[in-house]
Length: 283
Image 1 (cartoon, rainbow, N blue to C red):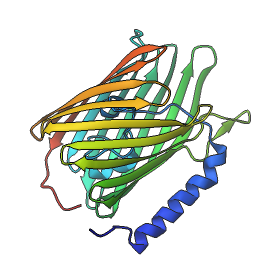
Image 2 (image 1 turned 90 degrees about the vertical axis):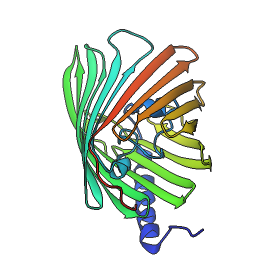
Image 3 (image 1 turned 90 degrees about the horizontal axis):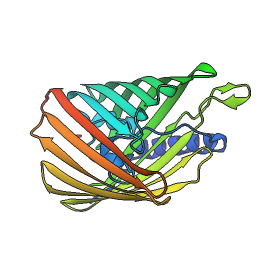
Image 4 (image 1 turned 45 degrees about the vertical axis):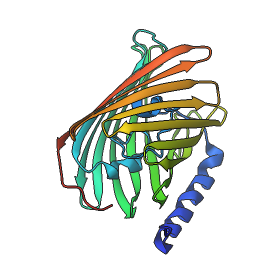
């Protein structure tokens, strides 16, 4: 079984991780976006197999080889009016895909809205890189609106058929206001390992500003092609579980639920729909 770390791919990895090391000391950060599938797996989404959206990693956009839309709703701790909503669309092109991202996070009084444009392309077999530029509008009832641009860079590297390495960095060069970043930097890196045909293990390390580095672990069991069972754990004590249902080639539904040791319960629901189907090609 041969490795896919070709000279071209090795050079890309060196440049990518050099960028991460350069900006890591500036690390201060925004809250992350996450889909329902990852929500039910300890928030381990950066290295997910067969993604239906690019919420967790911009590089996932390349692997969505159908024109599709995705919607995701998440409620925080069952508090009425406190939620996150994401809507994404993707259009595949030769060796790549374009995407659009719309997001609302928070309450009526305090919220963040994002509109983003993304592009991802193939860099090797089953490997991709993605870039997204987001316009972030932050609304606070007392202080008004603040706007900034947030770039994101993601990568997926299939090392061997059963093992995938992936990472994403959000906002590597923060824009400042009054000598403080409007939004900081976030870095996450993870692995997806296929234990056997029906069982996947995902691990992820995430570092965000003003928060401790956390370890995330998730497991996905696929008893059939149309049904998945998930569970996960985060090192701050959060446990999670979820399910996924696939209806032929058109529709995918995901549900995730988290239990925080102090704040209680949160749930997330996701829907992906393929508007136009294309014949699959070799990655």
